Image (cartoon, rainbow, N blue to C red):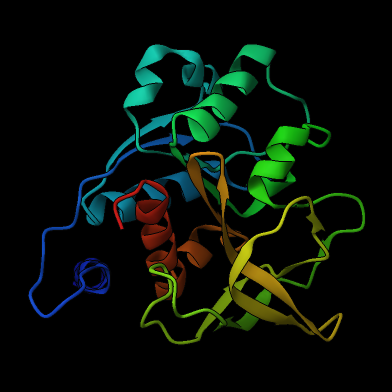
Length: 236
């Protein structure tokens, strides 16, 4: 029952105007299969949250699918993926082309911003990345504070509490629009938690949140992740 009510809450949050409109269908390709976090449990949560909001989701553990013509049918690509080694050049070029030239959305979740050190186009595309000097506070409870309520992703949202991993001191490779921040107890300063940017014709939604399945089931994470994916897909 609680889960069903959560799904209803997501849909209500996504609807705008006095009269409820049908939530636009987004076709999403979720890339996973490698991560220093529990990608199996988190992928299941991400998929369920998107599908409950009406998205059509295909999960692949083979990044090479980005290079096949069928990849162009998707509106957005979600990365729940992290590894140090670069992809082959064909797959790398395909991801950049899909976002920059074809205008597909890109969604970067938590440790996905740790991936591919030295891949300059990827680093530029996602805006902030975990590189030398980055760290995180001890996993625990903190407040995510909305600092830009004018964006469709955060419109009408209030600050929310979560239990998660607070990333800090990420390297900025390109400017982003920061929608939400959290205060690090270790460093006594605020750090970006939710940000967006453009990359060529494409939209990029980057959430630093989402350490594990429990963190992803937080209402604030769920709402911003679903809205962020729909926005990146051009459906919000």
